[in-house]
Image (cartoon, rainbow, N blue to C red):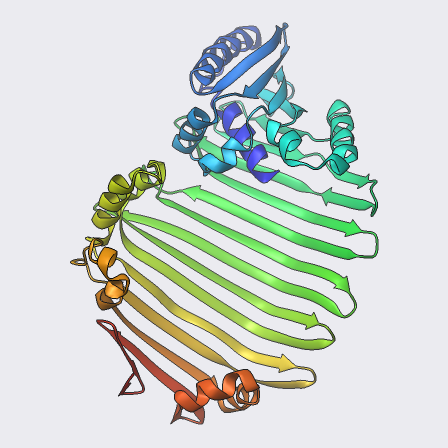
Length: 441
């Protein structure tokens, strides 16, 4: 749903251009001409446009997803983030578009977007028993219950909209109820491309009679294109609560999750950073309860050759020579993987709460490593890895872990050091040799 909605919004962003304020009739005519021009461009990039009906103040047409390969390239060049596999699953999708010009004081263009035909894969990948579900979806499409609405401002550099609320029950052996409420979005464009977007969702839930219940609430996300390159981006997200429950004895609850992803490009090399934190993660499985509180996780990868990465993403996996050459080029830049911190402030098990742990790690791949070496010696890659990790575990948590029979052997082989009342591990990897707390293994 998310990918489809984002792709459709991107299509319609491409269907309008920046313009200066003129008389309403002249403005409407000008926009019609631009829409006509842009729809022609869409047809050159894998889409088909049918059933176009143009009136004085509004129009209707249907966009179909015909050549998903061309569509993937086109959308990604216009700030989308879709894979060939994701778009291939959209083959045959048809989307109706109803446009109204100069609807109100804010809107130069308003549009309702809704599916009118499901992707072919829906019919080929579903079981005969799912026929009722498909028929239900067809009924929803006919009644325009799957609908995205948006409005562009007078300068076409800002937009806002919403996804129509959903509350549907799919009748089957086990009835399934799906509810979505309060999905809204707003954003801005620059030079006919998406610059930023902010989305929010109040509630998304799924109930399958008494067998399973899942809900996600208070979701927000934002995206910003910070440079000329499509890889110069930053995004953030927040989830208030997420819960999956099979019964009172089996559930997972995540509270207050925040995350951020930042991409930088310097001299053709890409660095990606991910930072996440959660207030708590609670799990109950077969009556056994535990919880992690104040969870932090960070990860980065740097020195990725952007040119080689882009070509590798498009390369045929069966073309081993090309894949190997591009992979070798990426390694030659000296890739670095880094976990600045993975930590849990405290761990709760049943009614007992103890201090948690902290872990950090850096791993480097020797830029002089030759992939062909691994053809005759699969372990050759280990000699090209150099890393350093540290792990600090509270004494109480370590004692709790050591009581598990599955962990006893590991503790015996790798006894920890004592450091400020905690158990400490210093782990080094040097050209295939592992060193734990100063001891070579």
